[in-house]
Image (spheres, rainbow, N blue to C red):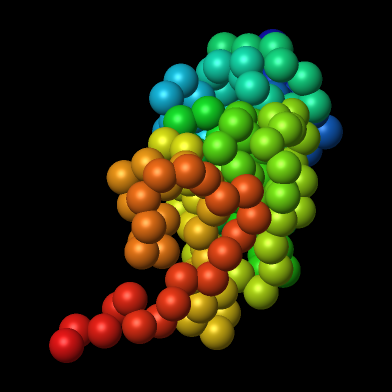
Length: 180
């Protein structure tokens, strides 16, 4: 019995220290949100940590490289919302800032260019909600303003046009939401 107790104590402290000190989570945590792109997955823990796995060919995991992952890897902390697009990802931090990473050929990251990013880049502030489509992104600001960026071939940005793309977050006219 003493031998079993020693193993349990050893395993408990080994696994516990791994959760807090490493990049791989071995202890079950409470998951509060999940989001999946074409071939990558994000989970958000109650503690505000973000974990990602899957394809990283465009940097959509935000790890700083383009290496695919087949286990969940910690990629951010202090986060309250996640959104995975086809090959890009957004996180909303607790301070209201939005950070984006991944494929950016249509400007879906909102960085003002069309260059892929493999690390999360700050793209907006004062935000309370985020969403990611296939190649477009949306944010809802604290003041109720909706901003959009990315691919718009079918009018998915809701800006009254179709075709082309926008590579910087752009305000949607509130008249669009009129129910007249």
